[in-house]
Image (cartoon, rainbow, N blue to C red):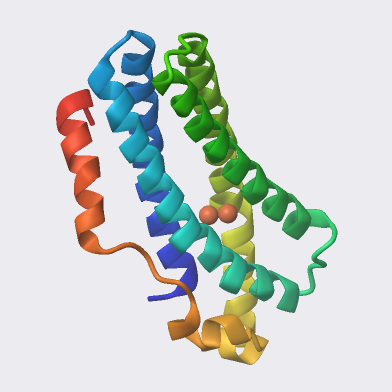
Length: 184
Ligand SMILES: [Fe+2]
Ligand SMILES: [Fe+2]
């Protein structure tokens, strides 16, 4: 499957997960003990889906492709996208840390987790919009012009098997379970 199509398909899974994250977060805010456990599972899913799959794939394949298309690492779109990935990682760690505080009985963490969820969702949705609406179409135009990724010389994508893959299919079952519980 073509790289931009793979990444856009993954964006739809992330969007679905972010919707769930907010609904689970609302239940955590309302004091639901099961929702705290479900939030921990959802954060673990997001961490693995993004860090073992999507973000690593973009960093291993998309970013070098952008560089091959003339963009510099230290400025412009590449710098912005890389910084947003780092922000997302920090926010995920922060939500997990707040969940630990809540587990230790620190009730203030309940409000903070919800605020962090909203901020994480907004940041990641804006990041994906940028990729979907600006970066991917621009790279697609370049690839159509030169014929293929191979001609652009992007080694990371030419050696596709070395690019980290996604999660095992069984890991996705959690989304269906949680949508059954919190709505989809
Ligand atoms: Fe990204
Ligand atoms: Fe992305």
